[in-house]
Length: 189
Length: 376
Image (tube, rainbow over all chains, first blue to last red):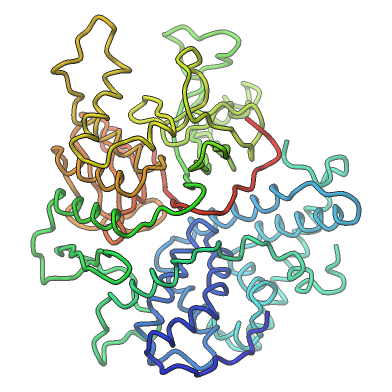
């Protein structure tokens, strides 16, 4: 999932073909970002609104538009859902991912346990830390693009990533320590 | 944990599948139509980045615009402080939008709901029913997050999946009383007016019956309409004509409340019952778009009020509220006037918010439900 791929200018900017191409290339990326900010239930609405705005602002959509589109989605989310509501939505989403993993065996089970620990640790992070890690780890943005989305400088981004990783490490250690080896890979029950 | 090598690489390796959007062949056409229906920004007045999304209207009208992919309602400012549209006009516009903007294609109708309620704990009622004069031991709030998966075909199983239940005591005294009572876990969760027994800790799934045998009325048949269970087959058979639909709703309610000796002829439910029936069906029932539109049209014929401006639900989403006078208890239905879809239902007791249901997602899909391991 590389974000370095420039958008091919095959269609005239402002034409429906241009919009369709933009949509085809980037809807899934914007949707994925929205899921990680407000959960799957509201991601469709956020991604949809982002592309409505992209059409209205088509004169300023950059040649490589991913960071711009995610920045718009970020603003849509910030304007529509309060911080506390966002935190509740995404914590529930991450918890659901961690608790609905299918039963597996052997080496794969180890990976699922790690996955669940990681998801729970991500859920426990403040939104600020979680967002920067997801931009880089799940959404495939380069550090330059992530800095653009977050509206900060590259050195500031580096500091933010460092801090977020440290916090995540701490939560993973806590989750690993608290995990009951007897119920490895099981759900809450 | 492999973070000792690279934490971000580990994250990439466990990227959840749910980050990918579900297949939806009509999505592009729908969003393109929506994008191209919006008024163009005025030159020189373009915001620096993303413009504010909603058009706030102290006084606006809702205009229906016929577009290539169906009818989409667009809120257009019409000037300073003109009268807001009537409840009836807004509901009829919402009905048109719903009827013509939804294809209802898919194997399942699914709804993600979150219901917040407050309740009192009276002790272990399963072991011994409390006397009518029993005082509550403590008060608590409960938030239930659940998904309804209603299958179109009787060959597929329909499910209610309870994802999470969170309960909190309302005060420090309630918390202490809860601890003294042995810190009991919630035994039920309320999802939009229906109480679901929690025989297993969430996440857990409950298989729903399509039909109801008269001898086994306790069988789970979520959803309900104004407290009367309604089966998926009954919902599928609701007529799309508003007059016939109102008759069907009346019969459903009268059939459950009238005694065998009491004549039904000439009796009609009070407006707040019909309001509640319609609200329940819009929020939690897989009604076809034509029936949803008819529900709005029946609602438009009731003596109801609407908010004079935009209201905000508990998620901060903007919509228009409708309600009917019911004494101390007031039920408000909040809908998004652009799409006609319900956003939330709020109940207020003597003006204070008492509980609410948030509609997080609704619609038809070909995706099959991912079920948790446990059953209710």
